[in-house]
Image 1: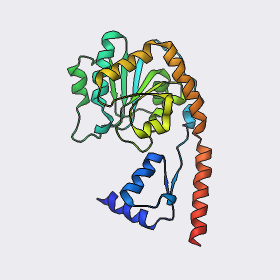
Image 2: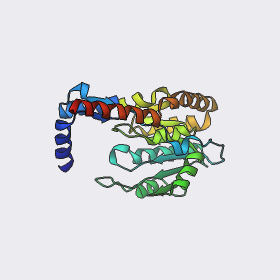
Image 3: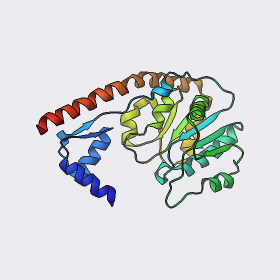
Image 4: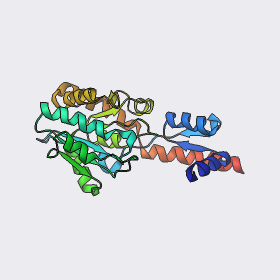
Length: 241
């Protein structure tokens, strides 16, 4: 309730609204009846702390998820898909990093145990930055099955260290990541498992996706984001005067 009231009040009085994707702009206009010309899309930049790190080959096929855990991000689907992958690639590992904010609460440990992959799945509520960087560098595939995001930053972190990504098929995911991602239905366990297996085992597909990521990443710049944000602020200040 507090968020709804504050957001509505802010939208009503704002000279300009900044958001991170065209999808979010559409949602803001739909939910708050804000004139389209007042809403400015400024994308996030590529993570600077990871962009200079080169990916390197590792022996263990690690599948990675990073981000707060919400129901809409379908972690049970990922775990079930991983169990299928494990039958084909026995040395595969899955790491899930993020605090569990699901409601109704999802017991991910129970899902892991139910599918017999307790020794292959790591559940981490929090890791330090250096540990997170190591996980990103070790990962072979990054999976993010969210049904609803304003932008979705963790997949960009993965791309910045050369890790191919698999995303739930949404309008915002296609807007931001385009053909640098492989897309799957959010709750289709078989499709997720098949796509993970392809990225782990097909070097031609991996190389193609990494090349597409290299083409995409320069379009995300924090310096450009800062410049565009400043321009919006200056225009709003001139309008107020």
